[in-house]
Length: 304
Image 1 (tube, helix red, strand yellow):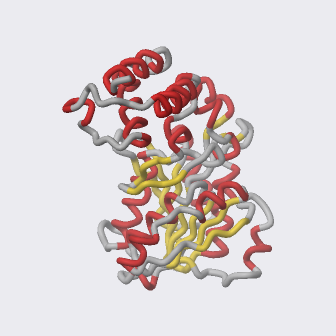
Image 2 (cartoon, rainbow, N blue to C red; image 1 turned 90 degrees about the vertical axis):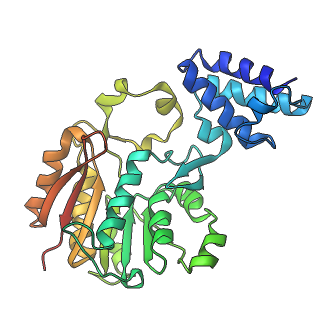
Image 3 (tube, rainbow, N blue to C red; image 1 turned 180 degrees about the horizontal axis):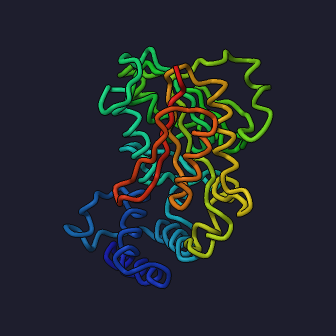
């Protein structure tokens, strides 16, 4: 079977669920991950022969994708901040919006904007709550070689994925430190973890916690609802800010005087999220918008 034929077949099948252009893009991305071809092989070699064994594997993958399974779970690869991360249905697929969180922290750490922290990455201690795939923890550790990052999650499966990300080549070149991945429940019993670490030791706290309300499920794509972990997505309508109150309590315990936090939020609840941190007397509380000018993050600082 030719590459051209398999692309046409896959695009037709996926177009039952996705717009035609998106379906074709997914097909091309998958084929690049499974075949020894480049991005442009389908243009310069449309009659490239695909073996019968590969066709069987590809058709099975297309069927999974046509049923709604995300491409990233089929390939077990997701791209975040220019790096390749391993993912599985045990963790959320990293979103582009979360890259802005990392970029903002990196800018602040470099002294850009009004916020600042110690200039040397080796002086920085960072805490990532609800780490999931570890994309935030790893990105900050790799972008600031020498920074010490601690990442927390309640899910053993998520921690297994996060700790197994392999950036050894980059680390050997740059001297970046591997994040420390720890099991702990952000919502309760964090004092147990505090017995094993020093209080007020972190310069930065970051988090992308669950924040989608149950009532917002109807607005979400079926492939997200049926395949991504609900534990990492949803919060009850009657207590949608439960994780932010917990994060604020962690920040009171572990954030250094003058240190700061940045959390990804539900855009419909930005004011209420700000109020949680203001009520606990954090300073400089404000909302930061994303590239679409929607409320996406809340910033807060521990008072000196």
